[in-house]
Length: 185
Image (cartoon, rainbow, N blue to C red; front, top):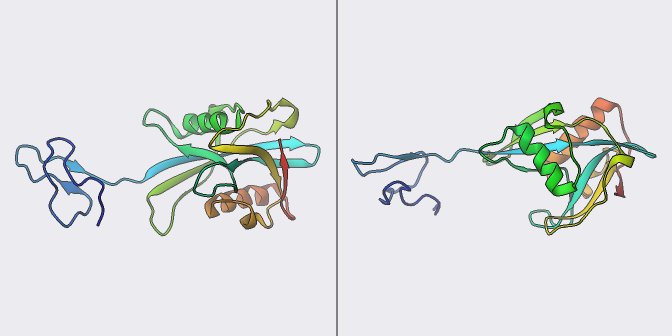
């Protein structure tokens, strides 16, 4: 049985069983309704040109889920942010790299499965030169920052299947093939 939203946040009345969404308060003076809407997540693919070619900026997660595995940088949007502004903020927070929110281009939007409680908004930033990327400072969320070159075998090193799909879509659109290689930045 779900434990979230057991009581009305407006008046404190208990919601009746069964606890299904949407829930409408039984208090006739209130009648507030609560929904369980999916949460938007902005994930940005940042292409970086280096000596080895063009790769994607990734982080090694310092937290669960996927602690120790690689992921594209991204996270939950704040209610005052567009997906572009939130994506650029997440890139800066997780990698220390600044990207221009106004230049983010949509790549792919999808929902998590089997429970579609997250909507992932994948976008692509303008290509950066490796020489312009500042030094990295690890945090509790991000243990390492690096570049991934090549789409094959990403399931061995990436934390999230949808990140793998997005990375492969990008590599495919660029005509880049071959095994993945990771280089720390």
